[in-house]
Amino acid sequence: MTDSQVQQVKDKLNVLDIVGGYVKLTKTGINYRGICPFHSEKGPSFFVSPGRQMWKCFGCGKGGDIFEFIKEIEGVEFGDALRLLANKAGVELKRENPQVSSERKRLYEICDLACSFFEKQLGNSTYGKDAKEYLLKRGITEESLKKWRLGYSPDTWQGLSDFLVGRGYTRDEIVKAGLAVPSDKGNNPYDRFRGRIIFPILDLNSQVVGFTARIFKDADKKETAKYINTPQTILYDKSNVLYGLNFAKVAIRKNNQCVLTEGNTDAIMCQQAGFENTVAVSGTALTERHLSILKRYTDNLLLAFDMDSAGDTATKRGINLAEMQGFNIKVIDTYSGAMPDGRQAKDPAEIILENPENWKASLEKVRAIMDYYFDSAFTKFDKNNPKDKKEIGKLILPAIKRLQNKIEQSHWIQKLVARLGVSQEAILEELKNTKLDDSSHSNVLENTRIAEVKGSSAEGRKKLVEDKIISLVLKNPENLHLIEDAHHALFEEKTRNLIENIKKGANIQKDEFKDVLDVMALKAEVDYEDDGEDEINLCLLQLKDIELRNILNKISLAIQLEPDEQKRDDLIREFNKAAKELHQV
Image (cartoon, rainbow, N blue to C red):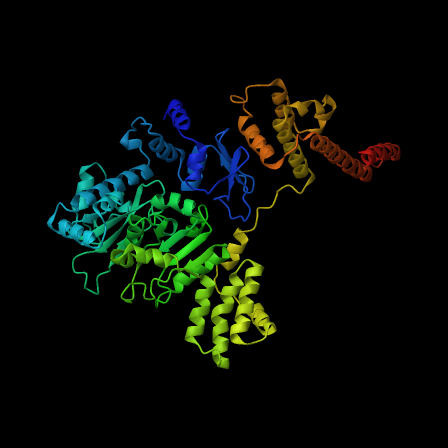
């Protein structure tokens, strides 16, 4: 890959657009800030500088250009990051030799080619036409079929595999992509998806990484799984992908809320009906990684889950994680007579098929998650029965304890006191004894701590002071005169070189210190509002203080080790002189 191609991609893309596709950013001065997607934090320490075409988190320390961001956020190597960004920029990269193409890139190619194969089968074969008719009857339009790249897998043992082998891919690669299953009889691997409707799973860049396959024929057979999914592969991790987020992320940020559904069809029908901030957690429960991804876009979640289903333990665990990460959670009543005729709706797709206005009405009648817990508990148990009061407490107190905001906690405690008719002291005592059985609770709390500033040693403090001086000088170069030649001995060699570099007015675009200077300049814009003259003078005094204390420590150690009395007296005089100078600083 040539440097010119890399630069061409950089020239055509804006760091604000790339990072803004993943992180909710707000303007602050000439820069933008947001919650860092690479570590858990409550206050935004992540900044994007359009002028410098760079990003930097002053919490975890990560930063760089658009390529570094894509590498970090997508977990890919530089070559894959370049390919992703080149596609966005409309830059055609020089073709690679297929033999030296990376394994990851080949798996992307296999998945995309398989998706095209499935798309073509939908409507072109007898069963494919029936599958398409079924989808259209479910309310999915022709436009949505194309947008979501829905397809059909023929009911053959090696139809897809033979097709991909004919295109130059090996059967082993097809297995690695999750599209084929090794045979235990020594034969060639056979296709994983056969005779099913195919829902491609796309990542945030709309690349195919896996598939969900729904049974179409023989749907009434109990021994046949209704849905099967691509297993864990290099490209696909079900705990790391939310179905439809590639289409929904802009709307989620715009509306500052995300609607979470359980099924692929729910997400398709919701977005098709104009509710574009909808995604699905298909094939898995809501995970901590899902929540970390959603946190980039919003803190507000609307859940369209079957909260009362028999197998809701995993769902509740995901909700618990969301509460501990500070999400504002509300529940959509899709199971309480939302249909005009009072019929119990099974899912959002069914409501929308009947009438999209009914789904809109459901979204306007959401309940806070705590209201759901209260209503559920007080419906199941009799508040006037002492034993039932205990059971109500068991259901509600853990939810209250998971709340991060103490004021919010207090509100629900008082509500529980009023509805149970018991003393607040009793509730507080039980709350204190309530244990949260979610094993990840301590991990979540640990992850949400703000990163501590390193460098409590003298060397660490000195580096922080030097960095601050450089930042202030970059913000206002006129203050360079404050750093006199006599001060140079106070700085580390690298900092001295930086200062000289700035004084000479070197072209930092080509200078070896460019990246460091860009980060420091951004920090100055973020942290300091005034011209910085007083701050620089104070920092120089701090450096002098650190230097003198370092000298005193060395002399003190030398005094203890010096056997010669005359030399020891000389050291004591030197120590007193330095101590006097320190006192004057």
